Each structure stands twice: as C-alpha cells, then as structure tokens.
Length: 290
Image (cartoon, rainbow, N blue to C red; front, side):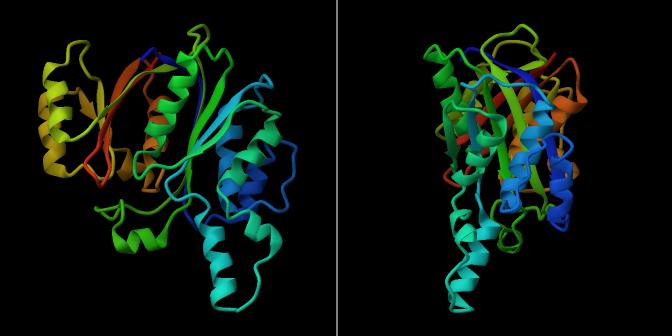
C-alpha cells in the first residue's frame, strides 16, 4: 500500500461512569452545535472527532469512516428493555439512534462533510478493515481528505463473558480519530502498511522474511495470547513493547485508541500493531510518527 498520511489525531478513553452531560460540555469546547437527542455513542463519536480536528476547517468532500465493534450498544439495550420488560413502544429518537450509522450523520452534519460516509464493523478487526476501504478509495485517485475513527462504549456484558477481553482489562469508553490524506506535506505521521493474513502461520512467515528498518515499538490486540506475543516479539525484536491495553483499558475500538495514544506520546518512532480475530485472521499495521 501507499502510505496514508496522518495530519491530526486524537485518542479519548474514559470510564463508563462519566456523565453524558460532561461529554456534551467537552464537545462544546470544540463545536458550537448542540445535540439534545444524541446518546452516549453519538457523543463519543463527536468528542473524539472534534478533538482530532481542533477547529480545523474541512473541505465539503471530506469522507468519514466510522469503525466500531459493537456500535450503538447502549441505546439498543435501552430500546429492547422498553419493548421486552416495560411492554411499551420505544421513544422515536431512541429507536432511530439504535442505528450506528446515525452517529456518522451527526458527525457529517457538524463538520459540513458531504463526502463518502461509511460505518464499518468486522469482529475485532474493525479499524483495520475500515482503513483498507479508505486505502482503496485513495488508490482510486480520491483527492479529498478523510476522517477515520474507532468508537465503542464500554460493555459490561462483554466483560462478564470475556468476549474480546480475555485478560479482564478494565472496561472503558473509547473514541480515537485520524484526519488523513494521500499527501505528505504537513503530515505528522503515516499508516505505512496495513497487511492481512489468513492465519498465524502466514503472519509468522511474513515476519521471518521481513526486511527493513528495526521496530521501535510493538503492540498487540486483545486476542493475541501471551505465549503467541512472546514468539512474535522474539521474531521482530522491538526496542520496547507498548502495552496500551493496561494503560487505557479495553473497548471494542481499543486498537484505534492505542494507535492514537502512540501518536500522542512517541515522536520520531515507529509502531507495529498485530491484531487477530476469533477466526484466526491476523492483521499487521505499521505506523510512523514524524
């Protein structure tokens, strides 16, 4: 792939107990738009994206790619409770907001963005799959900029079941965003490569044959086990491991939040992030911070 250049970024992680009114007050620091009908998922989307842009004006053809593991989970649970437990019809705005794509509508409306508007979910690899779609658009001579992010609410149900969180990291809300273009001028970093492998053997084989610069930092997604991580570290020989899950907590978009945190903290460094899903598919994402 050709590099996708990062021009601004953000990484918000917060405790599930943070009040929605606080999220609204934080958004108000970056945008004058008021959202009375927005739920927690929409507010997290707006907060992360507004933090990323910091008042930057966007071209009308800017594309928006929202990646999410669980989508609008909190609102959906509320609506189902109203229907199943209370035996009542859901509130109209509550029902509409169960659609995860509603968040990108609110975001595009806030930013005045009229380009492509896509919501992507792909079990445990949502951010990487969304980035693949963005890369295809850029390869097709798309000349506009794009905003790509990962957003998820903390899921108490997921924590109890161990789904995606095998080491029981603390649950967190997460919203991480990147404004990217195909042009390097003015960039602060880049997604240098985004590779996919059908299984562990294919991933390991590529690593063994890899040529290029040394690895500054190495990080792993939630489903990469400790023994497996040790083998990969031995093969790649990074200068250090970046254990963002211990620091940030876990949500479905933890990978995007971890990469955003890397961009915040490590100027002049490179990161390889290895992730996997429950079907045994692997991704390897290379990121550089200028």
